[in-house]
Length: 502
Ligand SMILES: Nc1ncnc2c1ncn2[C@@H]1O[C@H](COP(=O)(O)OP(=O)(O)O)[C@@H](O)[C@H]1O
Ligand SMILES: Cc1ncc(COP(=O)(O)O)c(N)n1
Image (cartoon, rainbow, N blue to C red; front, top):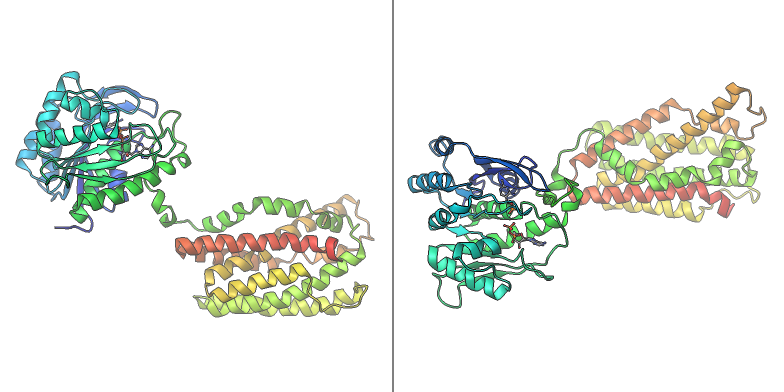
């Protein structure tokens, strides 16, 4: 019977570097939605470069582990990996005869990817005897050759023919794996000699990933297959899912940066977006992803000239006028955030911010623009950057996602706060050092940057966007990242606009 969360036991060796053996099995079983267990046949000392030691505990202790598990827990599937020697093989065979788990997948491990032997020379015959107790065996091409006492197949056709002979011999399905062949393709095939002619081979094609990180692919494949088979009862359907997952795990393996030899695959590449995030982590990700654009803001002549007091008056006046225009539109986006907010706390925060924006806009007109009038006297025209930025915010408002809108409005708080704080700090330092000119033409403006109320609002806006990001789906999170990035780009362009359009 199909089981939603299959209980899967791995009987295999330990790889302390986590890429192969029971460590790979437990990750693969979990990645396929199973509950993983492990009875350890042997301890290896190994890493991605090779195996430096093998310790095989007495076979009676393996039997004790197996009995402890099977006397208490129903097993939906068993995966068998490294078996060390004939005594260990005997213990597993004896246990399998007593306890017939629903699904038995046997990976006849003989040699590690690094080339080190993992099975005693004289144990191949004993292993052949165990194969008949499995439902599916998954030898790689060299192992397939050894089990048949034939040379390693060099073509896919030869490999399939060998698979058919082995399946005939042991009365189980053989998974023939293309990993050890060259070329751009990497197919696998289920070969069942008991099926009618023409239906014996079910091939699942695959492309080859160009990587050295193939440590543990065989272990991962066999345990994932055992788990999927317990869920679906269909080998071909299971293989198709598992192969696609493994391809992704190979493709994402470089992200792990584990070891200098044949590295492991990324078993949870498909589940990265479901990893729980701690408070502040999502906001930090958005911030870090925009580091380059923010560095460009710091390097803008506008910022340096405002700081030094050398900014041409016309540019300052343009900036103030555009700021007033912007605040009016920004206030509408904040009101929409209030309408979409999931909690009353957030609803109140954004509504209040929307009102503050309009008050600041009024103050800009009253106090600042009257003292720094535009040469044209025209203050109601939106410049191209202001228009584009506001259009972006209106678009984010229209999507209907609170999380995306919260991400889109956030750079206006966060970047303005950081740039302002920086300018203010330098202004104060100059004053304290006595190097500040009393005449600094923008000193009074820079002093408005040290507003604790705005700093507090920024902290809360970051917290709300962060919480929305942590609760968001994978696709919503990437839409948030993009909205935040786009707004950051507009922040940069907004600071740069006076030098272009004033
Ligand atoms: N470079 C690769 N690209 C894509 N799939 C691969 C690659 N190497 C191995 N595989 C797949 O990984 C699984 C294990 O294959 P293989 O490497 O032949 O076995 P083993 O790890 O036992 O030596 C198979 O499904 C195979 O097709
Ligand atoms: C404990 C243990 N078991 C199995 C393998 C084979 O790994 P692969 O999956 O790369 O063939 C290994 N290297 N170590």
